[in-house]
Length: 175
Image: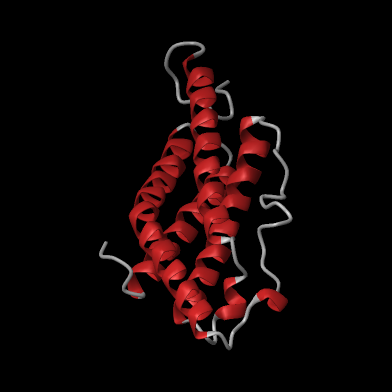
């Protein structure tokens, strides 16, 4: 009888592949968390009316949060790794609306520049993240992990693909 995830090959080869894939997935999760944390220095959705780029960053934050959650869930459920906790952000990460002087043109100009800088950085890394998400899903599929794992990693790849489209549709770079 074949193992549930069996692909054949030398005994222990699949175990080694699973371990390596789990390590790579965990490292990828850290990259996604870092990108999400960089964007989360502000509550960009609160600035969407005043700064168009803020709406884009809010959408990216949402897409990265979904990708992070799905990837973390997959790592815990299918690679036997312990969750590092759902709280990605420290207490100081979010800005309250009380500290947003929306009537100050200098402050708004600074936030606009900050948003544009973050979008340029996202445009540089997100295409590679998307490609890696697709490759991770394909490797998991090749190892014949349960369909739930493949589906979850498909969600990760899809959300990262949407993040790439969001950044490039906004004119923050070229694919």
